[in-house]
Structure formats: structure tokens, C-alpha cells
Image 1 (cartoon, one colour):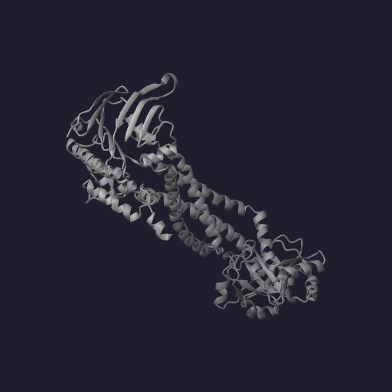
Image 2: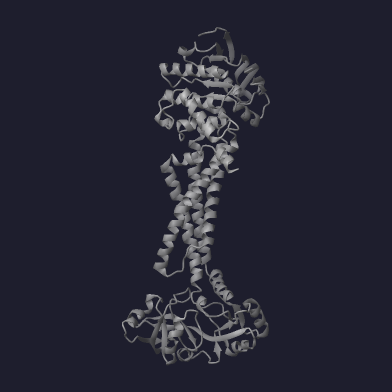
Amino acid sequence: MAWRIWQGRRIPLAWLMLTRQPVRLAVALAGIAFAGILMFMQLGFRDGLFDASVTIHRQFDADLVLMSPRTMSSIGMASFPRRRLVQTMADPAVRGITPVNWSLLLWRNPDTRINRSILTLGFEPGDPLFLDPALARQAEALTQRGRVLFDERSRPEFGSIADQFRTGEVVETEVAGKRVRVAGLLNLGPSFGADGNMITSRETFLDLAPTSPPGSIELGLIRLVPAADSEIVAQRLQRLLPPDVTVFTKAGFEEFEKTYWRTSTAIGFIFTLGAAMGFIVGCVIVYQILSSDVSDHLPEYATLMAMGYPLPSLLRVVGREGLLLAVLGYLPAYAAGLGLYALVRSGTNLPVYMNTDRALVVLVMILVMCLASSALAMRRLADADPAEIF
Amino acid sequence: MGIVVQGLCHSYGKGAMTRQVLQDVNLQIDRGEVVLLTGPSGCGKTTLLTLVGALRQVQHGSVRVLGQELAGAGRASRQRLRRRIGMIFQGHNLLRCLSAEQNVQMGADLLPGLGYRARRDLAREWLRAVGLGDHLAKLPHDLSGGQKQRVAIARALAAEPQLLLADEPTAALDSRSGRDVVELLRGLAREQGCAVLMVTHDPRILDVGDRLVRMEDGRLVRSVAEAVG
């Protein structure tokens, strides 16, 4: 079978038509690659921004979480009674819990004395909080009042805290008007709603935020026994508990936050529109290239028709040109996408990575772009009248 | 039987704009016969050629080419018939992006049931037959006018046609290479037992054909049955 296809092969007309005009080919590929890069960047930014909104959420050591039904996002966490979290311990699938206080407080930059909002988490220093064991090693330091752990990946507007701390200086500043001392550094990363993060003990948290009632928390982490199915347990707990709390799986918790940013901001729309612009620009470029290619070769196509080549076989040549352009243009776009993502990561701390889904989406968009353009360019072939060439 | 044309009329345009191009044309060409068609420009020679070449729909009269009636024949059956007709154009009409060998192979590719290698070897043989064995890989751009026209002849013959139509094949050539090309064409066509209808203005090659047919104002005025050469 393979031998017969090999034997039946023809002169690769589409390939030769493209490659014997290297300048035009280069322009076409540059255009397609540009459109591809535009789509990669826009979609990458969009997904990166949504992923960045759950930088903190991902790191919690939890299978399920409790939140107040009044909570809409991480920038406005409502509180609920702490005993709701304790109640979940009645379920045999629950292995452990961690009550967490969560608030945005004002951090004074010790260098410039400008206040800036920082995400503050308060927990009982012995409890598991993050998956990363680095916190557990430093949690001991928080048992002293007025000590905080500062996220060294917080934006530089909070001051050069990490540098000062590493040189061995005592770094002190004010949070919500009260004196705190940096007892250690963490590596968390800024998220969408918070430019910086700090962790402290529950006791210190209540000092810093005296309005928050002692018996209430903003987030409850629940860890399950290994065999438990988190979906099923979540439903069971939701039925058990009064309606003043909502149970999420960890994935649901992340999705809830992402959905907030997706639906209540224009980010998704803006970047999707950007990607669509790339698609349209690409369509115009490819159509221009292919239709002028067909026009230039019209006498040659007409000659082939006069020789007895059927019209569909010539339409396939144009189709193959589109396909070749798509594949040849995608490769540089993919390579440039990888490079630019690395650039974005180092420049903005945004978690933008090439993933298979996006790589496929852009590939499909480029294929559609090129094949649609070649389908439009094919209409010009209908003008090729073999009777006119004599 | 190669071509039998009976009572062929053809006109362009509609209504008051109608212009009669061919009027009651009768012509017969046998296999292996080389017929030259001459006449002033605009007299309908090319129209006759396109009708016989199955490139145009027949309006009135009958055109039988290689045993097939073209009056009323559809687009698809005309396209199939064209595979058996070799055509050589005024301009060489080679594909610019293909080498001489690949251009000729575009003709050989029309032959059914031959493997790629067989078709390529066929293309090389034909190029050698027209004396271009040393120029296989050259692009049309790098060939002289006469060489290009030879490639076009090789391409037309590579499809093993039973009928060969040529429209002023020497128009772009100087007299010497024009004569060479036409004689080559006649020799190869005779070897293949293929009928040839050639439109020409060139007085220097009028003696090449078996027969000379003259056309004026859409009519064949004289059929000279003189065997030359």
C-alpha cells in the first residue's frame, strides 16, 4: 500500500510553487508566524493572569475548604463561625483541619513609608498550612507575638525586605499601624488580588486586625483520609452543615476564584479579542499571499487544465499550499512563543507556560486561517479558462 | 480517424453584438497526417483550434475528435478527451517553478498506471529526443526561446497524444530554430502515428506539412492537397 502511494506520487507542485519564490514565501511565513505569536501571547497572558489569581490557593494543604457563602473572591473574604470547621471533624473521612484568617492589611514600606495592601494569613503555628514544607520549618518563629513571615516574591513596592533580612539586619515595619518584625522569608508569589503576602500567627493576626471577632475565620482547610473521594465528602458535609458555610473541593476553590476574575473583569474579553485580532490579521495576510499566487500562476493553471488536468486536482494544489504555509508558519510561532513566555515569566512573575491545550488551539487556528484563505483563493482558479491561453 | 469537422459554425457575443467567427467549416485530418492551417490574423484559426482541442463548447455543427463527438459534450468528458490531445502554445506556457524535466513529467503524469520512476524516465527520454538531454534540471528561465519550445513539445508528446495541436509554435523563435522545432515536431509526430494540426503564419515552414489549409473570414477557402517533402 505504502509502495503504491510512493509510486503514485506526483511532482510536489504546491511545494515548488511556494519555494521557488523565496521572498514571497518568507513574507507569508513571517505573517503567519506573527499572527501565531500574537495568539500565543494573548492567550498566554489571559491564562497566565487567571492562573496567577490562584497562586496562593494552590499552595494550601487541603482536600476541601470551607468559606462563607458571602465570600465572592480572595479580595473580599467574609468570615464564618470557626465551630463550623470543628463540626466537620465528626465525619470519619476528615483527617485534620486548619482554621485560617485571611485579610488585606496595610503594610508600610520601611524605606519609603508608603502604605500598601498586603494579603495577610493568620494560622495556629503548629497546624499544617501549605504543601511546601518550608513554612513548617519557620512556623516556630511565629509563636512569638508580632513576628511575620514575608513573601520574598512580593512586588518591590513593599520595600527591599528580603535583601535587608538576608544581610542579617532586624527588619521591622508597621502593619495596620502596629509594629511587626520579619522573622523569615517565604516563596509564594504575587497573585491577582494581592501584590504581596505575609503569614503570621492567629494571635498576631487578631492584634493587627482587632475588628475581626476571635471566634470567626475566613477560610477552613480540611484534610481527608487518603481513601476518601473529596467530591462525595464535600456533598456530605454540605448537607450536614448549616447554610452559613459553603464546602468546596480544592479544585472547586481555585475555579471559584478564577471564575470571579473571569466574569467580573474584562480580562478574558480583552485578551480573547486580542487573539481574534491576530487570527484576522493572519487571515488577511495569507489570503493576500495565496490569491496573488494563484493570479500569478493563472496562465499555468490554465495550461494544466488544457493538458487535461481536472479542476479539482488544481484546487488541491492551492489547498496544499495553504496547508504547507500553516505548518511552516506554525513552527517559528511555537518557538517564538516558548521564548517570549520565558521572557514574560522572568519579567512579571506571571505563570505563563506553553501547554498542550494552547499549542493545539493555536495550531488549529492557524490551520483554519490558512485553509479558509486557500478556499477563498480557489475561487480565482475558476477564472482560469483554458480556451483563453491560445 | 483523427479529426472530422462538419458544418461547424461559431460566433461570439449575444444579440446585436453577435460576431460570426466560423462559418460552415469542413475539415478532415487522418492519423499520421500533418496539416498546416494558415490565414490572416482574426480569421478564426485559433477558434477552430480551441474547438478541436475540446477547450470550447461546440455551438453548431459536428466535431469528431479521436472518435468522440464534441457537440453537446460536457465539461468533464471534454477534460478527459484533452488528456489524449497534445497542445503546444504560442508562448511556451511552461510552469516557471518546474525544471525542464519536471515540466515534461507533468505531461507524463497524465498517463495512467505508471509508477513515479517510469514517468520520470519517460520525461528524460523525451527531453533527450528533443535534444535537451543536457538541460534536464534547468528552469525555463535559464533556457533559450527555442529550448523552451522544445521542452513544450516534449511535454505535449510525453502524454502520448493521438492528436497534436500547435498554435504558431515558431512565433517567438528565429527562422533557424523555428524550422528546427517544426521539423522535430513533424518527425516525432510521425513516429507516434499522431495527427497534427498546426496554425502558422510563418511562410518559411509552410512546406513542412502534408497539406496546407487556408482560412479567410471564418471559411476554409482552399484545401491544397499537395504532398510536400
